[in-house]
Length: 334
Length: 288
Image (cartoon, rainbow over all chains, first blue to last red):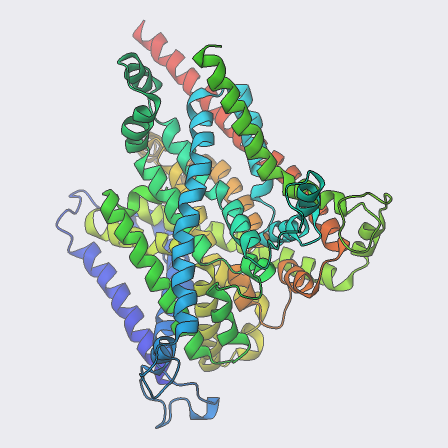
């Protein structure tokens, strides 16, 4: 079981680094008293056990193990830990070139799907922002208390309907002989039914729909925190409406915009349910490919490698955007 | 026609369009649950029926999935609130660099795609239960799903509890300590009652998040079935009005849950406002 040894060592390093930081922090508070004197044995024990189990057992160790696994071959259990269990880059090579030995041609099928997923997720995030911003602004700055209460309730209803059912409702709506095509043909806009599902239009609309609320709530909170007098002042000084939004509201709401966009992008790129239900025959979404590595091919190391590629891409994009916008992680995770 | 009139018309037009987009698909699905054809059909309505609902309540697989979902949801809620509370309290006792390091660790699960969390849980616990010698008891879909969901649901709970903790008046704690209470007593009699609303709402949020989760669940569930995974396999096989019926039931239930959640939140806000008003009144009295 040498895989687990690596995991244990790496996790121990993370924990040791944490205690090292606690012990030798230069900005330590002078009056700090010992942890167990501060909390007592029972509460102190609970805190350590709670945080320890959460972070170590459900998060750090599984993550480290997955990274470690992605550098191994798929082996039958009897050979794990034996002489054939060596570190390898094959799983990543499979992703890039589609073959374990040759590097002649790129694995276009998977690469195309990967880049399409990232690119479309970005575009959908921007569209979602454009749809959500006016409502968030209206709720935060214009609506009266009574209207606001109704709007919030209306927003909360679809929030808790799960992804599968949302996607299913779009399938009913946008199927070839579905409701929307019926309406369009009824009013004579199109003669032929439009193939929303096959063209992936239904998928994109549903992905946008699913993450509207993820976008609206942080936006609303951020805009709500702004003093309305600032907007009034700008208007009195003769600023046109788009000036007010671009140079007064948006800079102030930047943490909320960052948080909404980050969450929206992550959830769109990592969506599983919606592509499963609405993906057309030529759907390019990346997560079903990851799923197939696991439960069609049963090649877990390769699936882990694919998942890590997706994770790294998401992290890289989010951190780049945050850096460009001048935001910190602490500001967006509220 | 002045500018203000035009603006208000545009706003109303936008609001109407937005809510048609938001609620329309759900309403359309709701209609198919009551229509007689065996394929989910919206129009024309050929006849009203409750058949799809009776069929739904006799569906053993779905009921089985519902049972598992509830078990998982309750476990996740208990576990996540406990771990999230511990996480939030530890945060208040850390300063400087160790705090930022810790913050990064506890917030990271929120920002990681659910499928990655699900995958990592499955691959790790398969081997880990192996060396513990407990593969037969611990390595099953329900336990793994609870673990996978707890990793990020705990972060949500921690953020909610932390937001309330930031409003905690430290002088209450100091007063209790001065009057001779020990730290554990302060925790039990001062801090926990103060945090109760946050604990309740985070528990509710945890249950609902777990109940509707699919991304992490689909990897971690293995041979077991939750309501969402049963649903996913049904939807994949083909359309069927019983799914619409289930959706209608869930929408009605979520409306009820949302209303209760809202009510709790508003009650808490009202109480906080009252408290603040009282405090201001006392302060004013003191100044006089």
